[in-house]
Image (cartoon, rainbow, N blue to C red; front, side):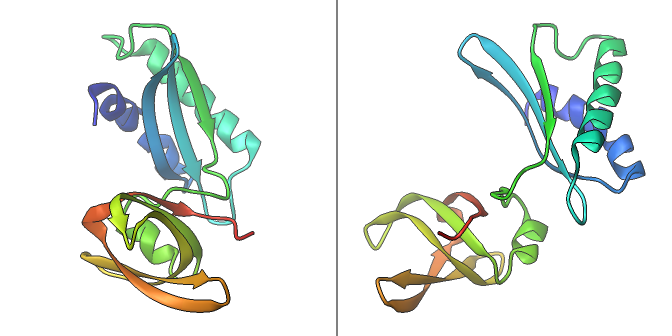
Length: 157
């Protein structure tokens, strides 16, 4: 993680823990000419706009008063829910997603494909098993976790 992300995480965690919110993801990225600090939060039952605004105001105040300034350049602060297609970042996320429909992107092809969608059947520290649908038949595939570039919950169409 970058120094900015580490510092922001330290600043935001107290308010998240105090309110039983979960830090889902945190990123500091440049898009075009602008920098964005994005904080994705959630809680059991879902997060609402007022809770996002509360965390945004808290974090904005902490960042404005930090010395030295952890982010000297101009940036946009965004605090939001991870949405329906929430990323799966850690072991707890994968465990919560057991039985759910997920999307997996791979670093290299597996059976000539780099992306899969299916129901997460099982997961351990080495592999995950997805039940995928190929036309009218279902098949289970095992994916080496080291080959996973990104994984997220998915909306089944």
